[in-house]
Length: 387
Image (tube, rainbow, N blue to C red):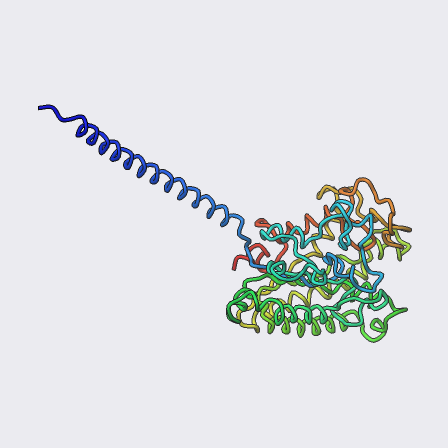
């Protein structure tokens, strides 16, 4: 007996529907598997791009100022051409391009850290850190006063206190979450050079060299700095990098003041070494006395001295004069507005009378921020960020 056409059609329809359902389920499984794979890739990419530290907070002077002094009544500013010529525009950095902390942020997976005084440094823009550094600033409040307005290290700490109490709390559920964020962040302190070149070594403007010999002045600076770092600790800082003073006797401004052409000024370098020796000791003392803290010392002096005395080893050919400066060694008067700088900037260690070129900054940053860092004690900044 044959099935009626209507029954056959109905049976075929049911089979077709069943096949369609199976195909739909298979497509759904395929789509689900695809989305799962995409999710894995996205998560893996996010993990790869996740910074090693939540944020970096930067304190210091013109070596790492990235625009704060643009907004101050001071002659210590670099918001004009040819500063920033290799950055693309003048930003306030005292360099032809990037500074050490700019390169450092890259090594840690962070963006360029914005200056505290910039009007756009608010809201979520500050969550990766802030730069409080101010050109002409020092450990001592009086340092750099001949330049006009500047934010001393004490003032920078007060600005950070404002950040911690007024800006950051709104981004965290409670004070314990904020404390964790700060404890995981890196704090970079590069201060002290101006206390010599814009204080102690200017006897016509400051009394410090009449009151203190070199050793006593270094003691004064370290004792003052110790109290300032404890203040930062009480505000939540735990991972702190203390940057030593470089070979100040080798910079063009100091070379221009001596008649000899026999290299660096030993007396000035001796002052820097007195400070650095005490700074290493302070690193050990603070690590032992402040619970939960981890201080490291960045050795700028030895690397920079070697760069100046063995420039070809590092790819440089000119180590005793500024790329953009005036007078002897380009150090008597620093880089002026619209002055034409040297064309071969990567061959120069010094950009102006006081500051390194971008090429020199890249080498200094690699020596402490990179996985292969060798110039930090007891560990690198790269390792510190991961603690």
